[in-house]
Image (cartoon, rainbow, N blue to C red; front, side, top):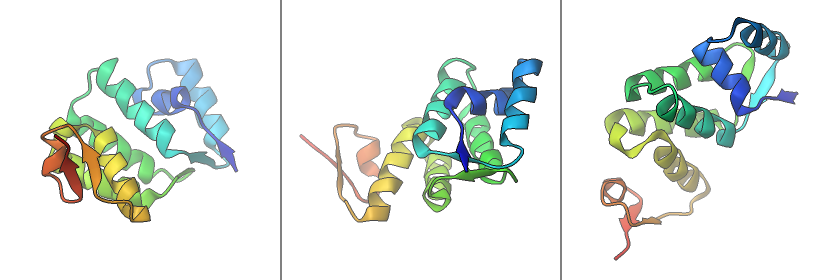
Length: 127
């Protein structure tokens, strides 16, 4: 299976360049894999560059998880991260994803200096 880069996912979500959207759609038409890193980078771009709200970011992740031609790496982990992100959008999607990845492999607690992040189960604040 082929894989996609961050800029391809951004085009599929934002749809701001017709030629690139068409090329991205053609590339993924036969199926494509999305790594968690590319997904996290894409959500970072949506936040920082396109100033999407947390709800819009969560909706974009849902759309990618349910996309017929895309296979998201560890989609169960990503779905759990979105659930956490919707409850605490101030954390950011990436933080929620990092915690869910650690949970999946049993490497918890996750240490952090972030007070808000440390409020989640399986995260501890370092002092």
